[in-house]
Length: 138
Image 1 (cartoon, one colour):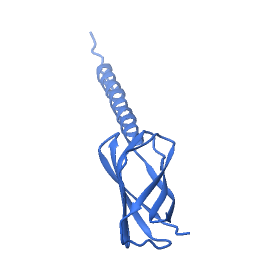
Image 2 (cartoon, one colour):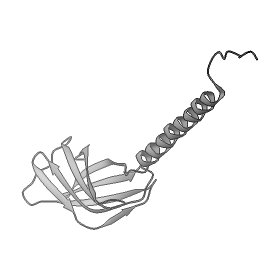
Image 3 (cartoon, rainbow, N blue to C red):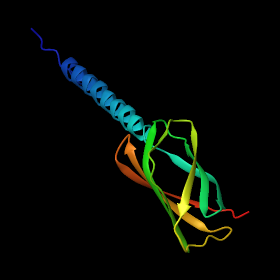
Image 4 (cartoon, helix red, strand yellow):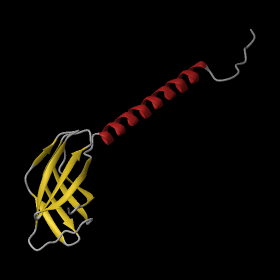
């Protein structure tokens, strides 16, 4: 009998390499889907149309994220004044709410002041967001 010489990789090794490639590709795709899902289900808020009228800052807060949000309180810090809004407000995704925050006694707001609203959320997670905006004083 003559012995046949094998050349190249055996069929068992080929199958193992093929299966390892499939498993690693599946793991990479699963990680991608999980990471993009968690990144897109975060609260995303924006403040616009902020006006100072009669000792109050009136503004619109929009939920442009993909989850419903409940803000438990909003505190605003401007260069020479502070304001607060302590009523719990539900802002479903894709909607906006008008908020009227009362400025503390003795504070002054000037046209174009850059203010920061510290929005404390109670849902979907208990967290705090800092949103900056400019105030218009008509």
